[in-house]
Image 1 (cartoon, one colour):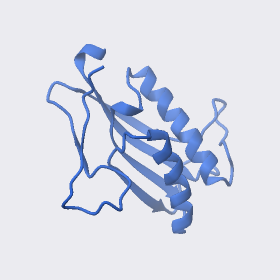
Image 2 (cartoon, helix red, strand yellow):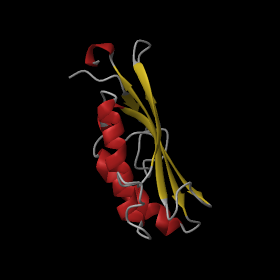
Image 3 (spheres, helix red, strand yellow):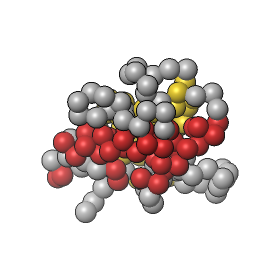
Image 4 (cartoon, one colour):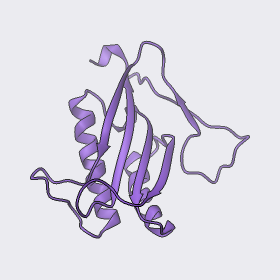
Amino acid sequence: MSRAVSLIHSDALSDAVEYAYAASVPGDAQLIFLAGACPLNQDGSTAGVGDYAAQAAKAVENMRTALEVSGADLDDVVQTRVLVASSNQADLVIAWEVVRDAFGDHDVPSTLMGVTVLGYRDQLVEIEATAAILPDRE
């Protein structure tokens, strides 16, 4: 299956990062802008209260669902921003590892940010994403 997303790596930049430095999509690709995927259960309760990894996993699950109803999947994601409500770098890494592992070989360009607070009660993680699909996949 042909994909719209081309990940861009460079030997001129550090290989210590766990993601591509850029991504591109052709002009005829349909862009899909996802709302921040939150660790919410269907009933609106927050999953994994106090657990960064569990909340990251639930946010990924919810992101997969939003992608699916949009006609896309994780391999169609162009970029992500992972927000973690913590000033502790170790907490950010816990959430990042879950997100990174979910994407597997599709090492999408990403930004990991510590923030002071997120929108829902007991929320620790949120994942913003943009995806792109080719017109023939609609």
